[in-house]
Length: 208
Image (cartoon, rainbow, N blue to C red; front, side):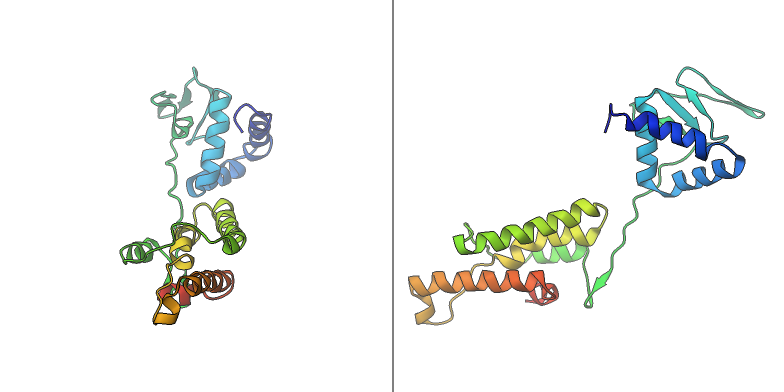
């Protein structure tokens, strides 16, 4: 985190190990060009320590100093204070988007739009007997997003969780329409959906 001892330690680590030879400088340049998380981490560390790195020669400099090359000179230019400005000469890589088909269904933003375009009604209040199970499912979905924030599948599943598990039960006969029966059937419907969600029933819930 900003202001912690991790920032100077990271820069010291980079100087000692990753900038000690031409081969290692080239490897770091390649890593910064392809790994967005590493690019941001290094940029934040440099920003906190008021230093910048030249992407041509991979040398660290104070913000007031320029980097001299045989074909010219590179300077640090402060514009908005973004992490990109502290790694000069290397373009920030794009976040990798991996969309993996799951059971024949591609879990991506297209699926999310399709499901949200359907007239699906969810309960206004989760029944007491279902709240613990739903909280566990929600915590698991949030945990997957926190662990892999660039995963499209994790985000889509998190956003689809309420629609797939908290749908309003639609009675099909007079007996099911009775108040007591309807409440009980609503609870059973949510509990079955949550049980399926926690197992291999995600595709079945999406299809239904």
